[in-house]
Image (cartoon, rainbow, N blue to C red):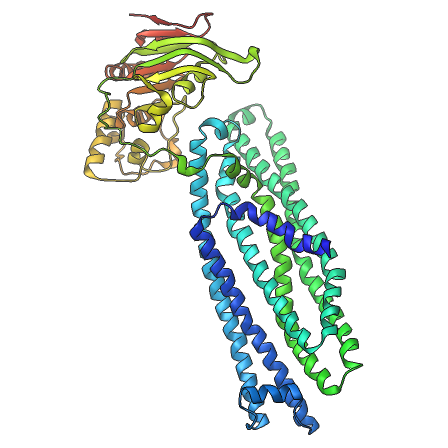
Length: 596
């Protein structure tokens, strides 16, 4: 019995609670209402089954030419219909039972439609909440998870957690209560039958369900891992496309992809087979139960009671069998979806709440930002671990003046990017103070937005309009359009757009592949100008540009630095020609040097 309770309830509720705790109070209340509504609709089935039992008893009494049974007579007296003709009563009770059965099915169908829409809204809300948590975690997730893993967690993972687990649990609870009520009604007819059904459930249902759950969990985990690895292999192929073709390693990557697909697809095939097993078990179990009941009820009892009971049982089985099947499928669904949503639930548990995301302040704040930001680091210590060998900065003191154009130089892995992450709040020092315009960097970033822009080595253009790529929002009005155009003009990309007939509300097709590297960088500069950023960080901005494009781009950067602090991470000598200061991270003492 302990094993039965554990398999049927305890384990399932443990998995259910992993998701339920992320629902807010209103969502929990609505979810409960949906479940209780479905349970209430199930009562209609029970009433219909009971009425069919009365029809059977009346029919047998007419055929046998005898009087009504004591129970039937009591029922007729209670509803004051004992004076009606028995044939009329049979017609009335049969029609009433049919109405209850049909009404229950229609209401249940509609309610589940509304439940799925409700769960879809929860899925949308949780996806949004998780994305906010990723932003709030700064680099914690971005540096440890691949884009494919993050994408899966935000989309399919949340879907499996909400519509999958919550939907399966709703079906499990509804059908479990319904079957419990059916057993109670049947117990009123014959107590031995109830004991026989419970014994059958323990002997037959529990072992089969244990097997289904174990197999479902195993193959769900296998398929989930396979799908993520498939996406990673596709990403590898796309990112290394030229190298793969030129080195003639196509077969290696194709075979590697094929091996991964074998794992995920074979696991999915077996999983579909496992999900069909409950139906077969229900069919076999129903036949065995009917045979068992024939021995228990018909042999020792009277013909009248036996026929009445068997009629009730037959109708009950026709209604209960689908419920038992749904219970088994819902258990498998909870187990499978928990496996699919494992990564998503892990991220939700690890990361801070999204309601801690600081509210944005418009970049046109009255804060003293007429010029670029002044950056100061005082006695800063930073290391990626507690090991002294991993120390990047020790007692670092630097003062970067406003409107300076600083070149950050040094070999790869020396700490240039980490330095940028420190002054933008993506990394926290073990000790020391980092301030922007005299304000602690954490406080500054929590109060203000848009004052700092970061332009990576390859600027990513989002799938949207030119305006959305510059403003990073979908709003559109005349004032914003004017700001977007001005930013595009000042960044030096406007003439190119006009020559191609591209307006600010035109879609950038194929994620910007029709734009050269220099043109994509200029759109990134336009983004910084739009936000009136006072600190712009350029990470190897000219590494993929030709000499002419590099010269033109650096002239634009030089002009911007008149009212903005600019940091350029670069290995190229050309960047030093426009810089006013340099920080050489390869030196034992890291300091700011004036270039003039």
